[in-house]
Amino acid sequence: MPKGDLPGWTQIFADDFSKDAALGSFLSAYGTRWTAYPSPWKDTSGNGTYDPARTLSASNGLMDIWVHTVNGVHYVSAPMPKLPKMTYGRYSVRFQADSTPGYKVAWLLWPDSDSWPADGEIDFPEGDLSSTISAYAHYASSSGGQDAFELSTTFSGWHTSTVEWKPGKVVFYLDGKVIGTSTKLVPSKPMHWVLQTETRLSGGAPSNSASGHVRVDWVTAYSYTP
Image (cartoon, rainbow, N blue to C red; front, side, top):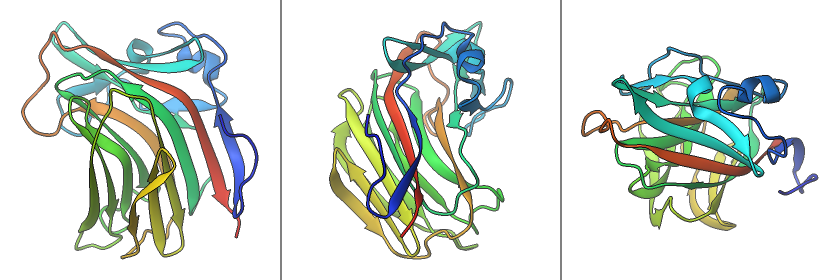
């Protein structure tokens, strides 16, 4: 896990999940550093139900997000690092996921105002777990619009994603390489970071038998200090 400041960035958060936490106890073990969407909030499609107690755990230095179904309820999770109010920042996560049909990630920066699309949105990584990774910079505009960067890389291998959000520019990195840059109508109001892991947006609800894990090795965040 990277530790320390970088040129133009001051590290304000770093977690490599060194403490084990059984399913159902993650937020009690990590509650000073993490929160999550509560149960029984519904996800974007309406087919999934957020429940951190049924989905989040930590072991062997990894945070585990378990997507699965019990009695017809598709359980999903959206953990959030506890960060100060931030406009601009650098956000990195090392991750890997099982190829699990019916589920996706949309790890995003979402406006504190909840004013969308006027205040924008930044998503990376995003994609169905059984498909490939993409990045999206949604314009801060009431008319919407976005820049999209779609890759051929799947979620099955270990990867490190980084978003650099600064005035007038969003840069996306995968495994240290720039995969996209957006400079149009870049968000300029406070946003918060959510590792939103949910059911797919098209194609219907997941199969009741679909079950898989998204694993996070470490997470870091930096404030913008030019």
